Length: 341
Image 1: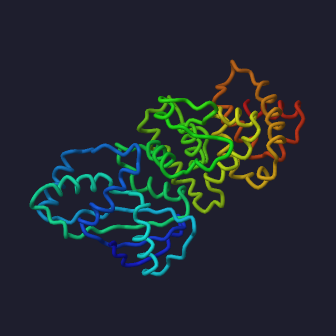
Image 2: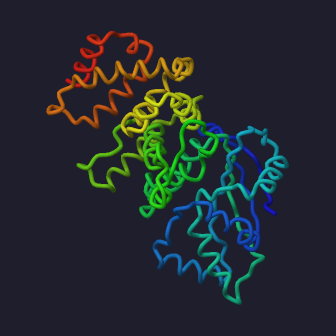
Image 3: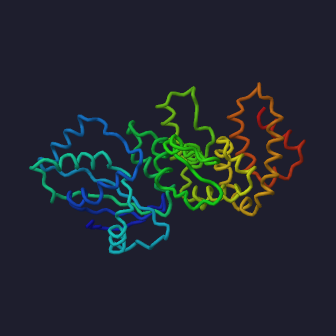
């Protein structure tokens, strides 16, 4: 059992946060298996440090606290300590290790020694949020500076493990591993969804830049996520994917979304036009995309980076959908040309 000492409210990520403790034995039985919920969990890093921690654990040290997270879409009131504690223990099998995967790996290795004390205390921090997006914000603040796990890697993991795509009606999603075994015709690549999620989180469509070294680009991405701080947004990425699925009932729309640059632009732009677009029927949206492509085709391909401008223009078009979809062909061409000049 995990004992929870208190419960408080984190107003930045709109989540309940508590501290507590358990034993090494319970941690090995209940928390260690959770690291396997991540298909692409981090490999052990800085072996010298973790070997030292392993020896210290055998000698009786207290391991630094780990952070466990839960997604509670029912939005339970967990302001009372007893309710918080009951929720954590009732739902422990559905938890995520937000910070401490390496330490749990080390704890498991230390437990093989005959001198290991399973009754020692392990302190934990617990976060219960109603949104994967808000947990991602906190995950980056916890892991920033740990080079072995880049922001992109973190987002890829969460996209794979924390979103349930099985309920989608008009689109399916495949991982690279699944695609290597058998490609499902018309399926979206999980990597493309992950890039769209990154765009959603940063509020920026330009998160790839070969002119910037990877390490520096990772720092920029972390800054973008943290600076956007749109954790109070009423629109979640899950709702956006549901809207993509709804509009994909029209095959032309689905084909447009499968162009990754379009999907990225859409997922960033719709944050400001969600209410308007949610009222648009798939066929009507398809007709507006014909207008978009007319404007885009007028751009001189030899003068610009088409991939970059497709992301930017799709964001612009979706963000200002009501105004731009009402233009005629000449007006949209002029608007796009001026935008790219």
